[in-house]
Length: 128
Image (cartoon, rainbow, N blue to C red; front, side, top):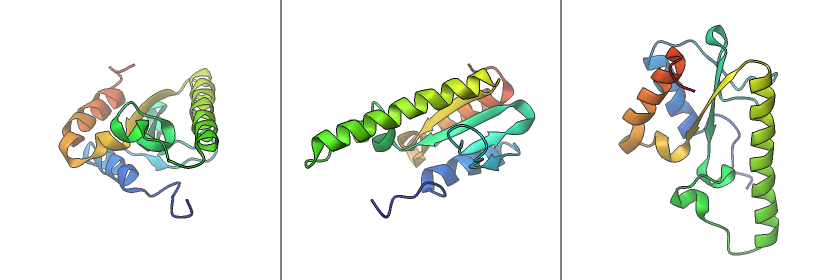
């Protein structure tokens, strides 16, 4: 676990490259906002979280895997991560921020075009 990074990950850099490609100005890992969103677009009051599938329990194959040892610890740990995410989203929405979650598996080369279009719609304001 010592090698797990909180920022500057490959998926986060891919999302930042997509935003730059779209011409959107953003800040990274803003600590003053709940959950320290990975990308913050102040001018349109929108934030993007780039979540690792395992750590935040995505519905894909990676998100459903569970370590073979210490299962009780891991179930509890991963459930707390999801609960913390929900609390952060609630606080951000209460302050008027719009939220987009991009998953690690969605930022791979094979699905990058779909993520690009989602981000574009999100920044244009036509996405929920």
